[in-house]
Structure formats: C-alpha cells, structure tokens
Length: 420
Image 1 (tube, rainbow, N blue to C red):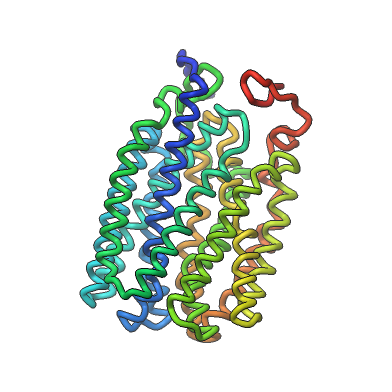
Image 2: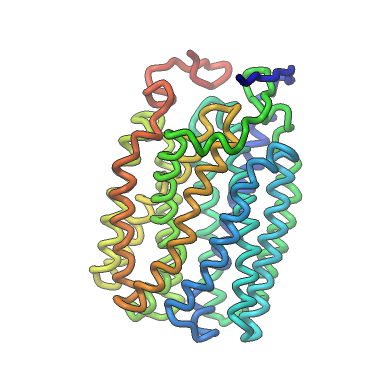
C-alpha cells in the first residue's frame, strides 16, 4: 500500500508561467543547436577521418550509449535537484563532449577519442532531454493547453539554424573545433539566462492543484503496459527522426552524388519542415486528438523516405520535406502522454525516453552496416518498418479522458484556458 504526501504550494501567476515557458523554449532551442552542430558536420567527419559507413555507424553508437546511460538516471536526478539543475549538468557534459570531438577531428585524431567525446555529448543530451521535457510538461499543465509540440518546434528551429550555420562552415572549410567552440559559448550565455527562470521545484512537483507529491518509485513504471507501449511509439518516432538526423546528409552526398554542403541543405530541409509540422500540429492535436494525428504523421514519414530513396536529387528534397512533417509529432506527443499523471511523470518519462533512445543505439550501426551492403540511400527504407510498428500501438497515447485536450470544452476568457 502506498501513500501520497501533500504540502501546500503557492499559486503560480500566469506571468510566471509565461516566463517559464519562454525559458523552456530557450532550453529546447539550445539542445537543438548543440545537437545539429555535430550532426551538420558528420559528413565532414567521415571524410576527414576516412571512415566507411560501417565505421561511422560504430562511432555514432558512442553517443547513443551515452544517452541511454544518462536517461534512466535523469528522472531520479530531476526529482532530487530539480529540472533546472539537471539541465545544467546535461549542458556542461554535452558542450565538453562537443568541443572534444571538434578538437580531435580537426587534428585528424583517433576515432576512439571521437567516440569518447560523443559519449559525453550523448550523456549530456540524455540528461538535458528528460529534464527539459519534464519542465515542459509542468508548464503545459499549468497553461492548460497543448504546448509540448511548440517546445519541440523550438528544438527543431535550433537545429535548422545550426544546420544552416553548419552548411556554411562546411562550405568554408572552417575547422570543427572553431565551429563547436562558438556553439559552446552561445549555449553557456543563453543557458545562464534561461535556467534560473524555470518554475520553482515545489510548483514543478504538482502544478495547478496546490499540492506536492512524493515521487513515484522509478522502477515501477517499467511494469506499466501503457507506459511501455508509449515507449514503443517514441522508439519508432525517434528512429524516424534520428535516421534523418544521422544519415540524411550522407545519403544525399553518396546516394545522389552531390557535394557535402548540398547534403547538409537536404538535412536542413528536413529540419525546417519538421519545425513547421510541430508548429501546425499543436492545433491539430487539440482539435482531432493524438491518435488520428499520429497515424497520418507516421504515414507521411514513410512517403517522404520513399521519395528520398527513389526520387531524383531534387525530388529527394521534396521527400525530405514530407519526411520532416511526418517526423514532427511522434516524440513530443509521446513525452506529453507519459506525463499525463503529474505524480508519476518523472518515472514514466524516464522509461519512455530510455525506450525511445534505443533507436539511437540501434539506428546508427544498423544503418551503417546496411549502408555497406546496399548503400546508405537504400538503407533508409528501414524507416518504413518502424513506422508500421508504431501505427499498431499508436492508441496507447490516447488522452486519459478519451478526447482531444480542448475538444468540446469552454474557454475561460479570464484565464485563457479550457475549463471542466
């Protein structure tokens, strides 16, 4: 038998929630900036170090291992020290790893040292990811509307900007270490502004109901069927998104025989339309609900991947755009679904994120080994198999009350939120 401990929490003014929302936007955008700084230079790293597709896949595996090492701990750490400090830990680890990778590649060093830097990068991103999603779920509940896709759109916007910068850096042949040091400085400055503006920990425990809850036992969430099925949806979404992140630029370069900087532009196209999908998708989720919207999303991802693989070089850009729209909502919707119950949000989100990041473990080497045999471009067809799996378990993310968040519910004009 378990008991719930409750304590009074001060009411949260709407202005404070809006400030926290802006801070979470910044945290997500910076995560995208850091990630895409590395992703935009993967093709340059492959060429500089003379790696085969399989060797590159093995090096990329280090980042995935780092992420999955940090993810199971992130929810527990967030419960102890709060999301803001947990994000700070992740930021430090991620930028140190990024700069290490840049230094090693620029010096033509060992792939083993690159893997060590990627492990730190992945570990930091794992901590950062869970903690900022937890804070985003708190703000979303406090505001009473779907905003998680907008946070992930901020992540995508950060990746778009960073990918465009990366394309310019690649074209100008700027050393990776110079590029990545600039990313580290921007992250430190903006992170120092955003993190103090997260909500206080007592509010984050249970926003909107005036209570604070004792955290759930982390291991127990692994025994919940709904949580595990949401994890499968997020796994497929992560694979759909992550495959493009890691391999799309390389696939354009090698499969369609275009220069490296054109491949990065193909990657930027994917990121741009994923951002658009997340901005537009929030309204669709509130109107139609999670399940039908995700069904369409995964179908679009398959269509986009097919166009990239079998289309001409220019049609592949159209495919990258469609793929981006299709990959937009799976991950943020899964995060929101795992946090439907505030008292168990940290434990469930850690489980769902850990399952999802299995895609980042399996994806890079799987695509690399397949790429050695059938070419990187045709290896992208694996996305379709995972999308079919996702479609079979999408009902697990259904809203608790069985209806879209704002469907058939009046809006309180004073609070600007649904009531009832």
